[in-house]
Amino acid sequence: MYVFFFKICIYSISICIFTVEKGGWLLEYYLWTCASWSTLTLYKKYLRCDSCDDKKELFSKILDQTALRFAGWLVYHTASCGTNGRKQLFFSTFVNNYFGLSRKGIQIQHNMGFGVSLKMFDDHKQHHSISSQQQVQGKELQPHVAWWDNFSKFHAHSIPTASKNVFSSCLWTGMTINEYVGPKVDDKVTYCPSFHVVPAMPDNICQERSVVDHKILACYNKGRRYYNNSMVKKFNIASVPLKIDVMANPKMKDMVDNPKNAGRLIHPHRLNSNNIGSNRGLTNILREYQEEHKMHLHGACTTYKCINSDENIFYRMLKVPPFFCL
Image (cartoon, rainbow, N blue to C red; front, side):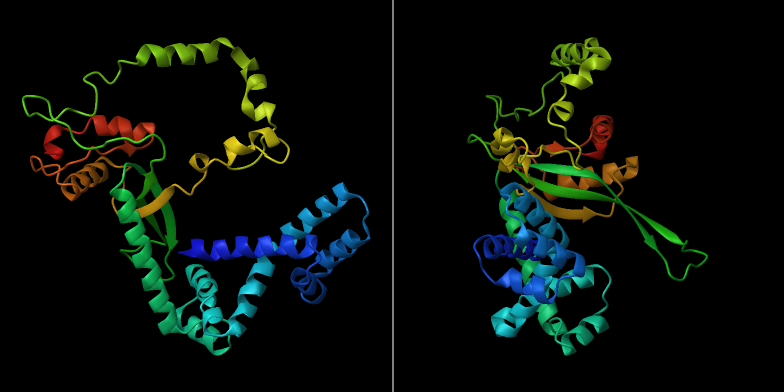
């Protein structure tokens, strides 16, 4: 749900660009009245600069320093525009709650005019939660790939006991629905003339092994100089996560900014309390997945299911005895 707050920040940044570049007043007012001394110094230098290239560089530095604070300032002041404006404070309140603000703190924040009330917070949170669930359910009915991976998080206990250690190892499993985009496909289960289900997996999963081995050997044969021919070296990629800088390489913009390479097609589904890194957790997850989609009932599951996981999880899936899943 905090994605909505992020969208507001992006919208605010677009307003920043428009107001400064087109001679507007909104960001300029913020810079003169609320920005830090260092940011205001950069802005004054930006006003005195005559070179277009230098102005773009200075403007980028100003955005890096003030974009997020300007977004928060904009959201807060939008709340003074009436009921619809006050709804925007839900997103900042949600982010504060996500990072540890208590319910008592939410109420105090509301009394001081910095957030929404507890009732409004609960109502909006429930609304967005239901809306997100419905969106994911809709994507799940369409061709997709289920992505599973480890989700590990440490939780500190303020009062440890004999049965509760200083830290809890929250070894969970993260699941997403990766939306399919491409040529139309039919994922319905098909049957052979003898009315047996046509399996989605080949009889021999290593039937393409020779192709994989050939490509791996081709990489090995290039030796240590292979790095000089890599995309990381060619495009001077130094960011985390790895991404080509489209400003320095405009020809790659269409490929890099393609929706298939972005996170817009990945929909968070759930956190499973089972640890997929353990054999017991993996079998429990597979059993739950089987029962959820009624795979154990003949003819009840009508679509093929695709699961994307790392090598370790996939390899252990292959070793699960059939009676665990039947």
